[in-house]
Image 1: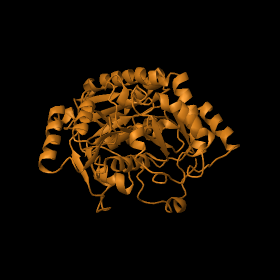
Image 2 (image 1 turned 135 degrees about the vertical axis):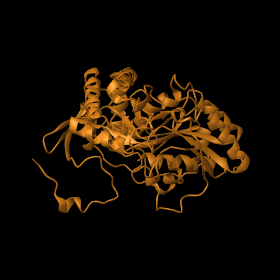
Image 3 (image 1 turned 30 degrees about the vertical axis):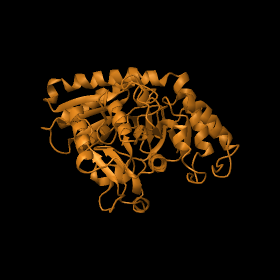
Length: 421
């Protein structure tokens, strides 16, 4: 059995939180393997990154082929073939009205660039964000992140001009109307429309608890933003590329055709290779002069090659449709567990869209129960993560997960719950 070298691990920053002390060697599909010989079902997928599963053979083959051509073709020096090819593939699938792309490396980088562009276009500075939202860990995005204080504590003073308003969370009594009333009040007692550049929102709260916005909420936020001559930015870093059962949540049947002014994407775009993008309307993009955007690794050629093949795999293997189908099965299975006598009413809510599913323990459950559950799940052979300041566990399997794997995962969930309840 392989063991961790404490001398080496001591040289890694204490600031990284980890679910386990396992060392992973390789992954295939929905399964990861460790140095100690264990195989585990992975319902974290790198926090929603590996939508095509671990080491999808087509994506790996595309990346290997690109290694023999060019790895890094810097975006401020010229074009490269794979970025152009990706744009041809991606642009037609964007939500209506979005026709211009800027590529970057991480989700946080995409969000910061979206805010930069919004400020440039509107000539205004303030940004309205929603409680429970997660937008990144960089200096700018941590000011916009309110899913947990851990992401921003002791790092202040933070970026000014960020204003927080409630996100509908009906399990905790916050309705759409209450959230809209608070937003109206924010503009009566704190904000003036001449200062506000953008409203930044996740269609489904990610780190904040896997809480889908009610169906009409995004439309109402877009209308409200435009009434204040501000832009609506949809952060689809986690919800994009089939995660919610539609390619993008903001153009899904659940939400209708929201048509955000700017959309950010990352995670599932390239099956684990670092890549992100900002999509926007051309008139917004053209407010920026050449040189105002860029980045050393922005739109890396190797990542773009993986992203091109990822888009083909999503379509040809019908993974978006499978996300919707398996999401229903997962929620149904978890719902049956919730209603079982052994849970004693301590599971309060099962929710989600597609394969972005949250299980929230009831307020009567002991504090810290989500972490206890996740540790027991690891012992059962299942990787899942907690999220939110509430007791929420998230389920984020690859989009090519099978019925058998969903059922096996739920059996492990039940076994883990029986040990802690």
